[in-house]
Image (cartoon, helix red, strand yellow):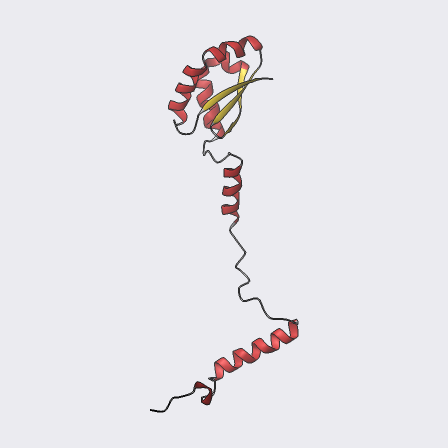
Length: 133
């Protein structure tokens, strides 16, 4: 049986036109065209998520929710002298206005932590830190 060589058959007109077009464009541009111009492009949302995760801010807890939970738990007197500053990598930082209040809150830290964990989620809050300010 004789073997058929594909070189004996001419290209179809569409393929020939596409090849000719690519040849002219590469000559005009001075080089070979990049096959996929969209390959390095990513959606901004995926980058933002990665950045938030890397700095520990992707805890998914709304700032107002943290403030509300703290105000409710602390009560009006303590809430007046304290305020949540940040929540990163599971650590809630609370600014305290007076050293005596800080000492008092340090003594209550295990109880405060447990109650906040019940409101905000056990896996999201791991520690509380008090700073003077």
